[in-house]
Structure formats: structure tokens, C-alpha cells
Image: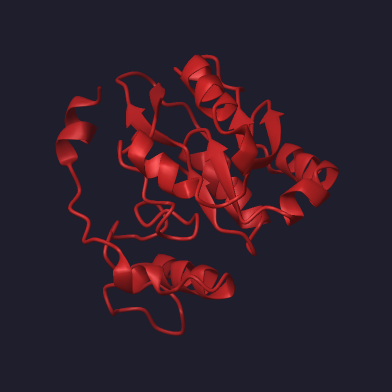
Length: 204
């Protein structure tokens, strides 16, 4: 079980300094999703939006690909993408649109209960503080074996993780994604992150 909440409005406003294309997921009914808040927020910012895709199960890569193909022109003229979903949906879109900066519109919180199983390439740790806007849509918590928030450990060899030599180093993936979109300076300019474990222990 998990719950999504709209990110801090001041943070969201900084995203809309650019022309954005919006992805909104409404698939998982067992998840609390702030549908009305998101709708109100989007309606008040129509001038900054090039288009909107409302998708059933954005975490399904094939669905997402189909919507991207259908809306190629509107996406192409945007300066970035904002995704209203759990962290998995953000990561899927970022992986399919590697040439665009992708922003999460929500934070995802953990709720007690059975989590289920997934065969997806991406995962969301439900930490309550989504960092994907700083890391090119690649989660530093789930893609790094040590869940490091502020850069690599320095133990990678040939771009592979020292914990598992078969796995790509998450922070090298993050750097290469940001370099691809010309945003690697984010890693120098961003604030230092200190993870709030109380949000994970207590949930919401």
C-alpha cells in the first residue's frame, strides 16, 4: 500500500517556469492519488502546458510508449515533462524520454500493508521525498545498492557496482542521463540531501 501527495507548491511552481507536457496516472485504485488537487493545479496553469496525457497504469512501459507516440508533437515542443504518479511512473517516462528533463509532481509515502510483487525494471521506495527532479528521473535510492543520495561511493569499476559487478552503478547512470540533457550542473548546484527516515518508519 502507498499514498501519493502533491509536492510542495513552491517547488512545483519552479517547474512551470518552463513549458511542460503533463503525464497523469490514474491506474492503481488501491493507492491514494490526489486527483482533485492535481486537476485544480493543472487547470490554473494551462498557459504553461503543451499537452496532457491521462494514462491508466503509467508504470506499463508499453502503454507509456503508445501515449508518447500519439502525442509526439506536443511533447517535442515542451521544455520538460511533469509526471503526476508514484515514483515508478516518473522513472518509466524519464527512461522513454531521455532527451527531456522530467519532474515528479508527487511525493510517495509508505503505508503499512502487503506491497505485492513487481516485475518492473523500476521501483519506488516510497520515501516521502522524491529526488527524481535532481537525478534525471533515475532514483538514487533504488538504483544504488547503498541508496546514496549525494553521489557515488567511489567503488565502481568499469561503470559497475562494487556490491554487484553485474549491476550498473546507479550514480554513473544518473550522471550520464543528466549529461545527455545538458543538466549535469544540477549535481554541483543542488542542496545536500539528508534523508528523513521518520517518514519511512512512521509512514503517513
